[in-house]
Image (cartoon, rainbow, N blue to C red; front, side):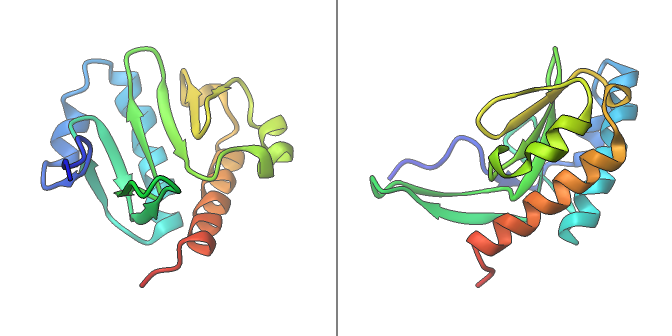
Length: 140
């Protein structure tokens, strides 16, 4: 079986974040990282070259394909900060309505700047998504 392209590694999270060209994006990522560390109780790890992930879970698809992925994480992309809310957003409609300016994908929350969203709502969203992932994928 081929190894996943994006997996946890020993690269420095601090070095990755300090290497971001956009100073505002660095400033925005630090509180997001604190929220995720608080929600998971785990330290950040690099996943691949551009994802900062916290904790992990093992999944198996119906096809038999399997892997390991962070329970939550973020990636400072060129256009947005991608925040990984792995259970998706259908259970969190009330929070999403209060969050502020954002876009979503299947399990990605895209925010341009942290100032565009309510940080308390974002923190609650992260905590609740971590709780849901741990319910779905209990630690072994």
